[in-house]
Image (cartoon, rainbow, N blue to C red; front, side, top):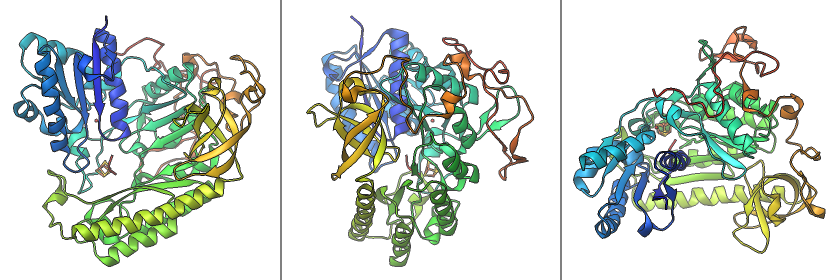
Amino acid sequence: MNPKLYLVTYGCQMNEYDSTKMADVLAKSHGYERTSVPEEADVLLLNTCSVREKAQEKVFSELGRWREWKQARPGRVIGVGGCVASQEGEQIASRAPHVDLVFGPQTLHRLPELLEQNKRTARPAVDISFPEIEKFDRLPEPRAEGPTAFVSIMEGCSKYCTFCIVPYTRGAEVSRPLDDVLVEIAQLAEQGVREITLLGQNVNAYRGRMGDTADICDLALLISYVARIPGIERIRFTTSHPAEFTDALIDAFAEEPKLASYLHLPVQSGSNRILAMMKRGYTREQFLAKIDRVKRARPGLSLSTDFIVGFPSESEEDFAQTMDLIDRCEFDAAFSFVYSPRPGTPAANLRDTVGAQVKSDRLQLLQARIREFDDAYKQSLVGTVQTVLVERPSRRGGGQMTGKTSSNRSVNFDAPLSAVGQFVEVLVTEMTTNSLRGRVISGDGVFVSGGVPSPGADAPPSPARGRGDASGLSSSIVGVGVGVGGGGRGRGGQPGADGVRLYSPLPLAGEGAPQGRVREPGQQNEPQGEAH
Ligand code: SF4
């Protein structure tokens, strides 16, 4: 019987992604299978997050519960990964001596070695170093778990917002080479993935090396490459930083139909004074100008953001500026929190002057306003036909399926299980508090009238289709070879304002020769990190 792994994840999508990679690594090295029953686990891992309040306390209280499981079977291994591990390091094992492994977001690929080291020495194995991009080269091939997948394209953050711990726990921004990202996505597409979310702490700070050249690929260009991978019909990205939200990215919303009509762009505050104290690197005027441009580029765009309410010294006027910004941008979704200091950050040295009740009142006002825009947005979809990727059976049961619109709204509708992974056209008939209901009127397949097309059968094109299919590219992995020859046919051929050369999409396989950096399936390179 294979050994069992129990994994608990706190925090953001980056952590969710990292957790799947931890499971993949241990499955490959030691045959570990995931279990949802901690009592039967041989290894228990806690993937931690230090962004929210009392993160350390939460971790140690969970570890306290795990101590009993360890006492029940002393051979069990307990590991702590993620940002709290990165921040606390050896301290974790000192405070919780039953912990055997401590590793950071950038060293999760070394879990097999850490396990062996712990077994050999009978002492806690700790590795919280930042070995840059090595992690990605050491991970097993991705495994699809449904029609949607995350692909991490960069790690870390170099922005150092005064309230945030991430740059200290995940390290500086590091981008994966373009070829590696494309190969991973093509491998997922081969396994049936149709929607990709490009992931990064500051995803639009992506600057991927192009082959063996000195050329650099930005996020806008990466999106145009991903759109040409056969099978990939929808592309999302998260999380963006407003200061890196370039004109090229705004153009992508106008030009690339596979780019979803959804943008999460964390603003944090509408007050220039507070933005400066947070060291966010933009003003409300600059933010508003970008929102105006992107909304013109993609009418109907769903716009989401993050807010921190009650930052030290936030006045009524500052908060009024935030509310005004909400009205101007019409955010239809937001993650919003009251400010609380994070130990180790510059803002933790500021006097937390805003009272708890004031923070709470402001948060409620803000959230109520966002709910109004959310309801208005959902209502605007009622009566329209939306292209929906069928993801899974609805949790409501009753034979219903659930999927997402391009604008990231969940829709429930009647459809057979075999529809999972298909794009269908859904007439939205009703909005509920958190989602939409609808009726399938046509789809990739003919399941509406019974049956699903066999793979390769002709299916009516959905609006999201087009460029990838039209390119005539092979669907094989090598079909995403990247021509990176010089001659950057740039958007105007000029370097971008940030010094990065901006290209038009370059020829893919069949149109231009790959430059030898694309890995064949199965080939691994030699060995060589939420807030916003
Ligand atoms: S809030 Fe976002 S951009 Fe700012 S330091 Fe944290 S991760 Fe970086």
